[in-house]
Image (tube, rainbow, N blue to C red; front, side, top):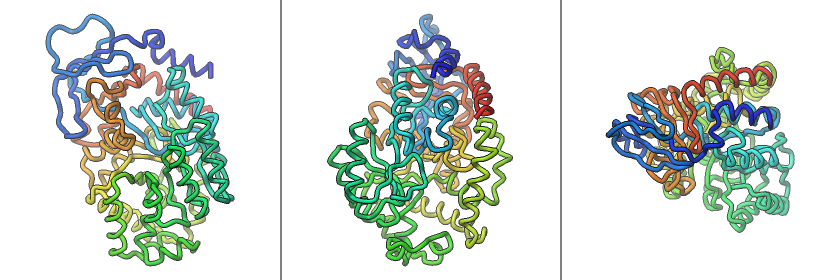
Length: 463
């Protein structure tokens, strides 16, 4: 930890000792992510951890505190990756020195972590909040609740309803923010977990388990669906067989697709606005087309751990490919298109969406970078650039019922901001043109970000 504290100090240049110092951004074009309005030539004043004032730039430049000239630049709320695994299995060792700072370097100032080693993620959450560690603010589940034969280290094996109740009680006592359920949780245990989480005042989120229908998950109060799991099955004439344990794949799901059943589940989700979708579209495409995507040519691999690129990802690619042997590439490509079509229909029905990536658990999910690519996939699914941007800014604030703190550039909000070199509403890929980041009131300038990225490339080479 000591080594990374030194990196933190080097990046912020002593900001720890001057946390309450004023930051003034002048001549910024402020993006209202609720309406799409651009407020030109604005001054944004940050005092401590919150935005103190936003208004037209006028008069002489302030002489106190730090002043940033943002002429020609665009200011947006900090981005959220709503599905991460910072301290997960084989990549856990890179969580502190690589993954967390790399998220901030890419403008991600908040994450929902859905499966990590419990002690590590709780310690990191506290250290980031205290400005002892460079990283985004965190909402965490600790380990996932999975079936008795879960393949994941960052999980708790659940075989019975009592197992589920004990796990919820333990995690509540340790201070997690929510409960994350995984695909292999047994049916009766799932409903016990749902009841225990509700009694404990914890949201429960995650996969719709294989043994549970999407409609049942809605009724049980599950707050988010990940990867569109449950919706595929609900749109199939074979849903009963799938819930009973029959195998499923893109081939079988497409062959048994029923438009009327799909319309029914879309309508149900539209009626329950408290249930959100986190489809992980970039990873879904990468998973189903893993044998056809040239991920080794990704220019951002310099930020991925060396062992991920040389060992972990090739091994995962082979493992995924073995499970796809019976599904021809053309069918899997059709399934990826089908996923985008489902997202398009859900979006048209005003179902809420969250941008999440699953990083770094999947192949070529480079922390931070993958969130920007996820936004591009939303646009491919028919979202406007503004709507795509909302999935990583305004929608997380709505999801957490924290509009008073997050999701907009307004006085009183937490000072999580990203300064861009071009308008993201013209082209969503402009979210990658980052020239400055404000993370919990701490400012990283363009030179500081460049120095951080260079250091993180060296860290990645050692991992």
